Image 1 (cartoon, rainbow over the protein chains, first blue to last red):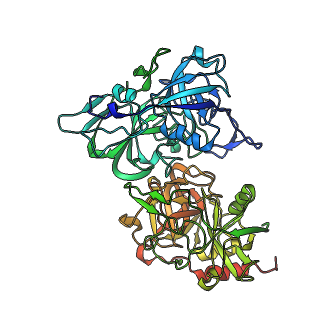
Image 2: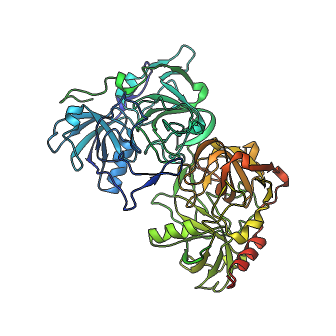
Image 3: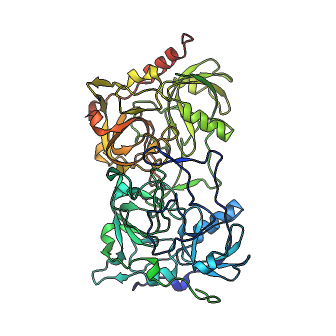
Length: 293
Length: 285
């Protein structure tokens, strides 16, 4: 993105995390939009087969978290990990058979979610340790004071299309525009934590549920209409939030594939351009081993 | 209907290690009235008038065990009788108004002089009844309201439709915190403030209708559906939060005949609600 910023002033912290196992309760089942019970995989652990660029809907899964789901055992240390990790941050596996493998943060979802090469990922499992090279919080765009940036690494900022326009707007390429009716669970929560579930993406279910979002892909950069996520997630007319889809299929009603928020400001501060290539898979965020962001 | 006596504890409210919260414009504030017993806030008053954050008109009830708290919140229904069992307000009777998600609290109304005698930790008996009740019209789902309190909501059956008068009708995009959560356990916050035209006169105890919201289980978007609920707590400066609506009816929009009454709407009254709760608590069933 061609934009003046303070990336040269940002600090990197090395944060420890642990691949967290999937969790269930003894009742197992949850409820879909039609009131039917389901029991499906999705949150926690290492979820293979879903990477950035893949469809975000259509899986036999619920709250599907692509790749590694990472937490810290200590609650306060975990908040540091969740709040400070930014999309595009480098992640290294530091224990287990995949030790030395590297991936990158694709978002938060009460876990930090990490994508990496399939050949490495299949050797990772719950309990394995990772290091996150967290950098990005505090990012400021000098020529766009109304736009608050968060959860966005310098690597992601550099990769986003396009930048400051001649009229002073911030042009951002997105693959989809999301209407405010789609905002599900996550409304009212801190925007440095978890993500915003989108309804209207229940592929294969009733027409009365659809908001046309079944086409979303993991890693898509999207624009959320009438959303102000500067200080938490809320509805606000004529505000725009830019996010990156970090989770996939949900059957739980009122939930769905969701974006982590990266930019928020008055709608007029942005020039949103639809561009099918606006996806993390186009950004070459995975770095070779041994390199630093 | 099965009635269950539940134990509730008067809540203190909780604040984290920092005194400040952040409003939607990034300003810090200290939250007042978020849980606990709130004096001086009454049913029928504006949700925007007082300086508060999710302030409820009465006392919040909790249980120290998480699972028992879920049951307390899930089973409590509007109009259920609440009897104080310990402390200086021993023996006084109030009524469940509603419930709040997230923090998992039951909201109960009492006369002001009784509220002033309650102290956090006091115990109450809550005679729960209402979940599982059939709606007045086939095809609708009813929840969170005691049979004895249904008449307070001013509902009228007209053929196969239910006529309901509300203060305001809002589209689902105004629903914030609580969306995607089970409506037997939570309220939904309306993302409105005193500048929002449709809800400028919104009061505690009002009925409101939300279009395109299916709240039979979790609350979620569904075209041509309708949910109707009671305003149970006041506004909030937090983004994504606001006055809380506990859903009592949900179903296809065509089964409702919603009259938007605006300034003419009559909210629930404290006296009638407590009177209904006293009636519900009689040992004649």
